[in-house]
Image (cartoon, rainbow, N blue to C red):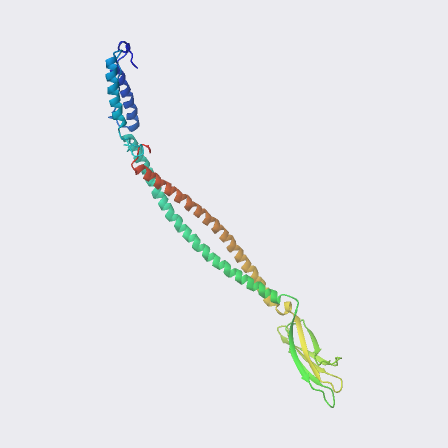
Length: 306
């Protein structure tokens, strides 16, 4: 603003120097460059009331501002930022720490992958063993279901004797019992409306191991009657296979115990595997962030980045 009294109260040159000094000091703090010197233009409008001077000044100003308006603007994102010594010192300190993080995370990843590989191999091994014991357990339970019950296990002897002109049909059969406790029976399969067949006599002879040899004499006390039938000696399955059932139950308890221990061990391994997998993910993220930070610091900055 045109102020005729300005020369009496202030100095334009001193004011310009003061403003330049403030800018330089601020930029030296920012850039850490002690020799920074800002480019500057100050325009003085001290013409008082001279109309000729006003016209000349207006023309000069128009030329000056036209010249400035024709400058090609430099976008801030393309304008390089020159880091000062202090900032470079901070970058060097950060890079040293980041490189240490990258090295440690790389070593951790190697260790984690080794542990994961070992745990996965152990899990696969135990999975196969568990599957084997489950199949063994199923086989034992199936065999127990087949023999550990009170249904009869039979030894059968079939016989056939034609009718006789004089006398009755008669036959002697021998069977071996499967256990000391047994029952015998004779079943008529002749197809007559009545059953004529009878056991004439029976003898039991001990044969060891709890077995007995059963000898039965069977006849049909009826004239002109053929004899067809079967002799049966039966024992309960749980009695016949008692020793086998005891052994199977012992094996069953042992396999269940082993299987329970393996399942518990697998659960712990799965938990440990989950911990290592989480550690791997955390370390990978930490490693990636450190690399991105290193690249960010090393890459030349623009003023927009700063």
